[in-house]
Image 1 (cartoon, one colour):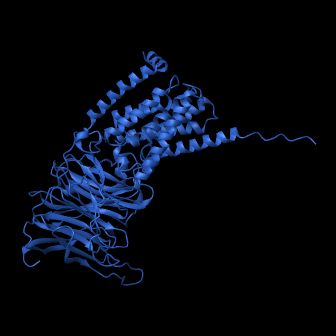
Image 2 (cartoon, helix red, strand yellow):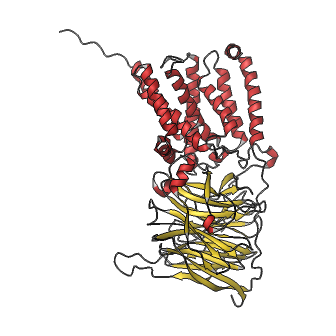
Length: 401
Length: 239
């Protein structure tokens, strides 16, 4: 029969057209059947954690998160708030090893225990050799973990994994919690996939900042491209944590590491690190839930080519951690805004010397902040001199702003 | 002054979801590791056999089989492990083209047998489409296009367009062998069934290695044509 069909197709153009139409219709029908149902238009979950604009943040705790043994370097933390009733209020993830981009770098984690009000001893939760074996291809280096809790209580971890060529050859690995429960000692992750983001050997996309939760239970994961040019993107995930597409946030080619701040369910800002000489926070805006974005002039807020972290705690209650010192990361500042465009510096989170104290030493660096809301408090973590992850906690009290 | 540079990222739902890039079907995560190795095994085996074209057929078959097995079963020592680190996965089309060459080398047809003359034009047209698509995807990677072309590979509309183009070439082939157009149609079928390698249509049809090879092959074909059409040198005259 196959030979007869083949012979018929070879002889008759009409048969080929008919065959193509039939096969094409079947193929398109099968394709449509395999696809997941369309998602609703994205609408952000807008927090109401701090509704009163008369409240001011007051520091109520600080310290350093314990490091795994014999691990001198740490960077790029991410915070994940856990539901009330769990033993831990927060999980923190960061990358640690001998130094950034060292072959021994792994993803470390710790948990803030509600009962003892302390961070638990850290442990490594992601190793590039184990993940490579599970995925079937090698991973050269790991970095920049970002965590998210889906509607089923599973932790998803997005990690930068490099190919050949450093951070510019990065891919975003999507990992998902294996097993249930959020106990630190039992936390394990299994790989889902390298997110398909680029035709060019799927290279040069990275994550850094926290996801924006959506009303449909999914989220938007901020990410960026970093090979020569830099541009920000947002990746959409559904409530089950399945990747559903990507969108570019800006036509500018020097913006990266966006942090998403919702003013309302469809009016959002994305504030970004800017690698241009302007040394300000870059900004784009959407009024339709991310379906279209408008480039804005850079904010007046100073930030000299460094990662920022933002969190919306209520309508008109936007907070941003950024480096406000010129040409250095020696000062990390917490700022506040009601409209996303005009910001007021509240207080320094960390301050050090922009000049090295001795030859061969580095200047102080407090950078790559992360934020979360847990137990009625604003938590901020940040890289402390590339040696540890430090943290601060703020409660909100009435008083002069 | 506010700058307004709108980026329309998704079309209205009234277009029936055809243009939507937000409903991709992705490949099974569990199957991907072995599929990864199987794909590279076919590509590397075909490459090995092509490089050993001067060897006897039995030797080529053994060499191809050894490379296939090593890549499939080598684990972290498999070449697929390192190739995946750099290049991720080959496209379905590259795998099918390599599989076709392996079948030829292992005895279905004599190696180097030329297809019927009508299909050379079809192959040229298909190759040109692929090269242009690759350049567009490369520009898109660096955000040099006004619309997100790679993301369009997650849409149903892209599948329809490719089906029409490949199908048109297949219809036009006449009595010639299905050739490249047939491989593209088979790749589309496997993509719809398996969503391999990434759930994106462009990754299934054209990877950068195949794109580079097509351009090198085209360049070689042009140069060879020029050399063949150059007038012969005048014979030396006797003293």
